Length: 137
Image (cartoon, rainbow, N blue to C red; front, top):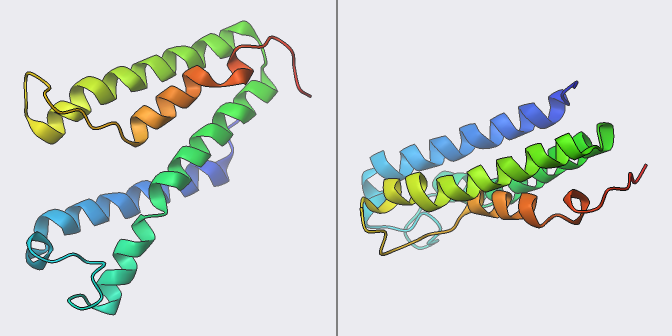
C-alpha cells in the first residue's frame, strides 16, 4: 500500500518538535521553577516554542486517524480492520504498562496517566468504520 508522504512528513515534524520540547523541559534550568507560558517570567521565544507544542498532540492524533481512514478506504476488508484493532490494543497496552512505568517508575502502577498513545489506541478500537463491513466509497 502506498503511503501519503505529506502525512508522514508532518507526523515526523510533530515528533521532532515534541522531542525538542521534552529536551527543553529536562535541560533548561529555569524550566524547573518557571512556567514557560507565564508571561511575567518567560521570554517571547520560549513562550512561542512552548505554545506551538500544544498543537502537536492533537495534530498527531488527527494524522493517525487520517492514516487509518485512508488505509481502510484503500483496502476495506476484514484483514485491514483486524490489523487496526490489534494496533489499537497494542497501543493501549503500551500506554498502560511501559509508558506509565517510564513516567512514574512505580512497579505497582498506583498512578496511571492516559495520554496521546492511549487516545489513538482507544480511537482505533472504538471507530465505527472498524465495526461495519460496508465500504463508504
